[in-house]
Amino acid sequence: MTRIHNLLIPAIIILLLCCPAAYAGEDDDSDLSMRVPDVRLVNVEPGSINFAPDMTDMINGWTKTEEITAVVSANTNWVLTIKGSEEYWEGPWQKPVSDIYWNLAGGEYQPLTTQSTEVASGGKCNGSGYPIHMKVELDLSQDAPGEYYYYVIIFELTSP
Image (tube, rainbow, N blue to C red; front, side, top):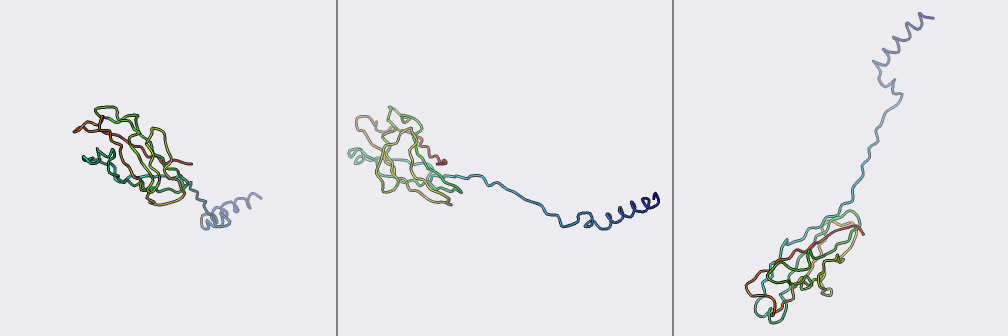
């Protein structure tokens, strides 16, 4: 019996070394997995607007309308919001954020606030543009000639 074991063990080792498939018994396969993350991107073009009111604008009380486009790409549902960064513009007097008016092309103009307001919402898309019109209310008694005012507007793309 010992003699059979002495011959059987080396035979099995030789068989496994010469024929690895005999060890596996069948083809092996590998499973792959991947979790695709939620992607929501917004790009605003142009990145800045320079309003340059003339005398007619000052008398009428409004700047000319300027357009920016929020370009959205997402692989899931999204909500685009707009809000102001501060209550007042940076400048020689406290020009309120509410002097900035905006609309999604063709909609009603509404004053900007520091609270997030929905501009648009949607689902999967790749580079969809949303034109947003902006204008600024002017005040002859407050807006000092020759002075500059600066303001930051925040666009956010979030989940619904």
